[in-house]
Amino acid sequence: MTAFPVPPEHVAPAAVHLGTDPVTLADLLRVAGDPGFERWQEQVRRTGGCSDPIHLSGLTVTRDRASGNVLYSYSTAGEPGGRLRVACGNRRASRCPSCAWLYAGDTFHLIRAGLSGDPAKGTPRTVRTHPKVFATLTAPSFGPVHNRPASGRCRCGAQHADNAPELGTALDPDRYDYAGAVLWNNHAGDLWRRFTIYLRRELAHRAGLSQSALGEVCRVSFGKVAEFQKRGAVHFHAIVRLDGPEGPDTAPPSWASAGLLDEAIRAAVGRVSVPVPATGKRPAVVLRWGTQVDVQPITSAVTDGTELTEQAVASYVAKYATKAAETTGTVDRRIGELPELDKLPELPDHARRLIEACFALDEHYPGRMLARWAHMLGFRGHFSTKSRRYSTTLGALRQVRADYRARQERRERGLPDPDDAPEGSTLTLAHWTYAGHGHTPGESWLAQQIHRDITESRITAREALAELQDPEGETAWL
Image (cartoon, rainbow, N blue to C red; front, top):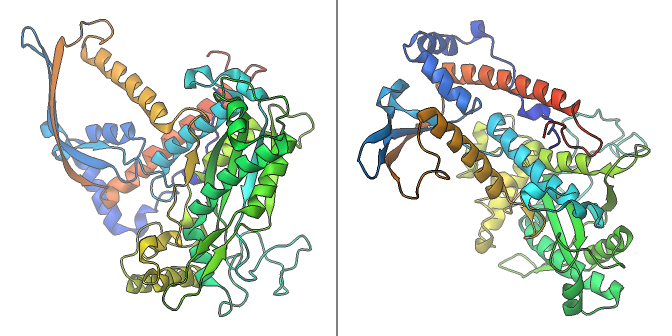
């Protein structure tokens, strides 16, 4: 198992200076002086320092079915505030760095299993030899924006720094096609679906086969993630792999190659279109992919430093799986109505115009729910998806983790292992209710520090594990 690098956005922000925030300071002193402070800390640490934990109240009782004796019982009545705190599970790093880190780690292992193989995750090692590429599909232009071209000078005449706030914003906002941009985002999922159809057709054409015949000898597998560019347009990064007819367990045909996959992807991108019918005062439009298409073969090892390796691709995809439209300066929560934008003075004008375009178009395309997804600049698809046979699933990875923790808890409680005890020998009764979520200001400050400590420990552990890796990329102790 290769170590997953911890991106900077998954590290909690620096602590607030206590002397400048009397409300936080007063609440912090209250929390620290509470008799249940140690148990509160333990709860928060078990969530990884979650920024917005879910509060539950209730109880659970485990009995021996034959005798009726109580083997274990637990109630939140003795917990701080009468509540148990569990992690929120939010994938966005802007909302919860702790839970986003876990989501990114799961995505990393899901993607890497489909690149290098992992029998523990249902993917054979032989999949490493299958042709595979890393493709980037982009949106078309909706008008000139501030950028950093190779020449170093933007069309506005300035040389922008890497983090310049104007990057990606329209040179002429009054002539920029904001309506076209949000419509394209809204239909990006349809473009991707049609792309996968045309890709199979292009592969069949190049192999001299019919589409049905192609399915008998070759299967296309993929894993992808969506990323927002600074201009507010979605583009997709995808691992595309060629397998045998039964998926990763079977070898692809001899004619399958990364070069042929490259040609088929570029041809399919050029053929895809999604017509949007006229409605009201809006004319009909045809949406297409942008002309910028990047396709790179993926290798299993670095030879001269220029190859795109499995490790690099998995890390890249995992990084963007926890980001959304907020990277463009917009908000990371739904917007109920436009006047709410007036309460966001730091919202960039470019993002505001995109959001306003979503609301303006909503009445023309009621089935597309543009206003509902205005905070996503119109995009309503999943940020990470995969084909059925690419590799394991996020659900399966989470279940492995849940089973491991359940075994730990059974040992701590002295309960019998289900694998050793007769089926149905114990009976568990539980009752849980939702009791709120989040932290008070002082609790939030402490949770940030707990998350920071946990993150630093994780980084140290992964650096140590990296030194134990064998030539095949596996940790020696595993």
